[in-house]
Amino acid sequence: MNPFVEAIYKGFALGMTLCFSFGPSFFALLKTSLDKGYRSGLALAFGIFVSDVFCVGLALVGASTVLGSPQSKLIIGIVGGTILAVYGFYSIFQTKTVNPDDEQIVIKSVNIPVTMIKGFALNILNPFVLLLWFGWVAFVSGKDNFTTIHVTIFFVVSLITILGTDILKAVIAHKIKKVMTPGFFNFVNRVMGLVMVILGVVMIAKTL
Image (cartoon, rainbow, N blue to C red; front, side):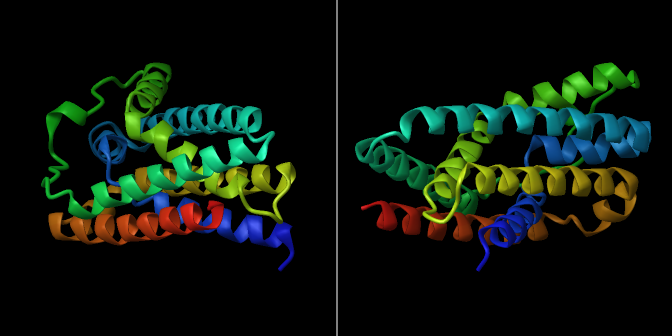
């Protein structure tokens, strides 16, 4: 398969997968859109998007500085695969019931710039966000048929897909909330976690 095509469709697939990651940012986006209107939701979504771009940039810089030797590739491959697998196990066995009406995650401000900053901070302060992006950067950077351009395309498509789905959530939040039952949360988290575990194990196996 052409690497450019592969980078685009796999980047899109990753973006669609991560858009169902039910963390604080997800519920803050829904609640902000419901309580303050879709414009505030869009501002929050853009703030989250900027923080994701920042995390991916950090991960890419870190990967580029340590991938210069076979030993470094071995280390980052094992570490990246372990991160994906651990995050996947965490998602599979997480039994905490998430309440979308939790007032702690409601963005109360209607000031658009402030809401954007809060979206950025809410996402960047989640320690799993940077670790997760580092794991994916390590995974994608280790593909033999991917150059720097292909890796860049992969993450550009992923990030744009996530932003697009976040915008969609903000616009139709009232419809999304109706199907977001605790059972649905747990099911999707476990499926996504299983995929992460498999990819992490595959990455470690290929590295070794």
